[in-house]
Length: 193
Image 1: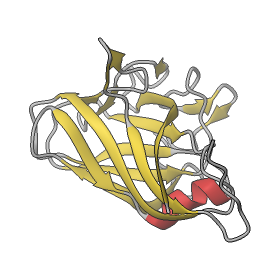
Image 2: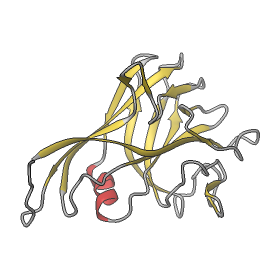
Image 3: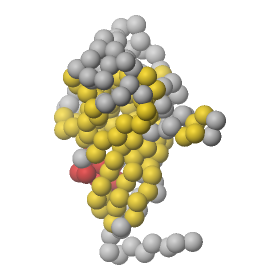
Image 4: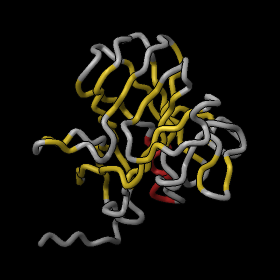
């Protein structure tokens, strides 16, 4: 059994609100909100997990920068299509490839309907975490690493902002990450240098 921290290779916040849905927010803090319709897309860098590995446990860690409402619930859904960080908006995954429904809402072609994880909040700032559905994360290893959508699914209306992958300040890393436990397949050799 091996455990690694898997950081993000891409992330951005997107909106379905008419004033922001055509703008790219790659590099900005991540956010969720039901009033301005903020949501976020993230993609973990799974390249260090060997092909054929079996995922045995996954916990997602996210640093909440702000938001006064602790009643909101944020849900992660695996995406069906890959997004490009510096091109993704509320109405497109990348230049030339639009979401079927703004905000990656189509469960037929933008995202899966099965929840990959659910974040609930006890505080308005600090580290938050949730367990991730193993089969949803395993699909990123076995098929295509398309990433996840994080969106508000119930409760509160105020913004929640989260540190993005660029979130390192004064030597403190607040970037989101997945803590992943896996078992290598029986035919693999793990070389420790």
